[in-house]
Length: 188
Image 1 (spheres, rainbow, N blue to C red):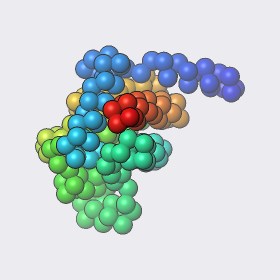
Image 2: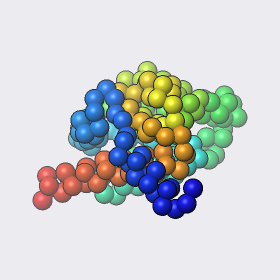
Image 3: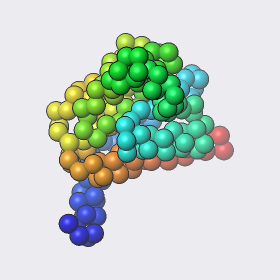
Image 4: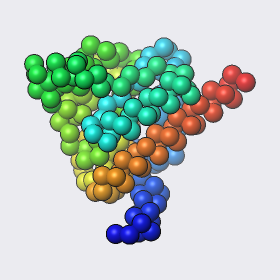
């Protein structure tokens, strides 16, 4: 695939994300409301992902804190994660961390390109037990397990890791850019 074809495929991914339970724009608006409530009620946004998705959520957390003034926690502390993984297996590492940190006033943003990562799915289950709002970002198969679990689910209909990750990053940028603008409009 040459560069032009790659970028055309990426443009297609960027223009076709699917959001459930409602369409894309209403889901973005609902997510903005969830994130605004986190700020209003002094909650936190927890972000999790593996590999490239871990980089995507780290960038989103940076934007949430700096541009949106929302407390955001990226659960990627290597010593803590490896301690949990060593004791209970990698599939439980994020869930174990969320069991300590998650409050009902919080939001979990869970990102998995395939939507099949056991550690991400277990963390979502833990967050739901803690009564937190869960927003998922996935791709690959439309019936992936992660997509079935969130209060809001953003899905990219592609099986190309890079294109799914870039679309997830664009969607998260859309959220943080709009939230930052809302903050500026409200505070002058």
